[in-house]
Length: 188
Image 1 (cartoon, rainbow, N blue to C red):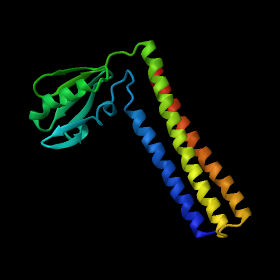
Image 2: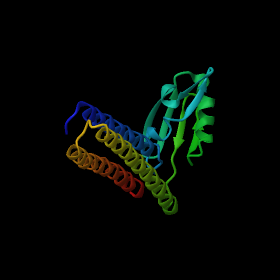
Image 3: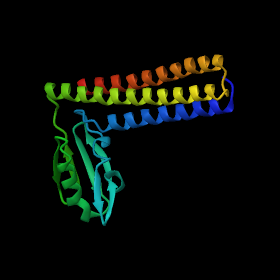
Image 4: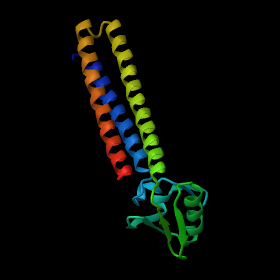
């Protein structure tokens, strides 16, 4: 494909699509499975002396075993607020304090709950795919505008459209890989 404008447009498109996959990956990390992992609670926001911070910036989060997370706040005065945030997040987990740290216990998921979680994961995946297609549509509109302004020839436009479709297909495939991995994790 010719033209520095078109090349810059494709780089911008690739970066937007990568960002979409990063968001999907982040959202999938916070989806609860029956296995303990810090991603389940690290994003929860806690009010800390007038600022709102994610939990992972206020405490050490560690996995004790397959069903237990340990939250050790750096400021012991934040133990109770951290506990309240985890309880109010409605994650379906148990939270207990021993005065110095929190023990977050993750119960086994029932089959019905696993099916619900898989449906939610598919919804997240579909939203990501729609976002990828929106990026493609936006890029396509800009390519057509370049062709209309005589910056791209019609042949270059067709080549760019093919290249754009291949790029989109690659990112949708990557999204499917992330979704399938998460689904297997949930159902295991």
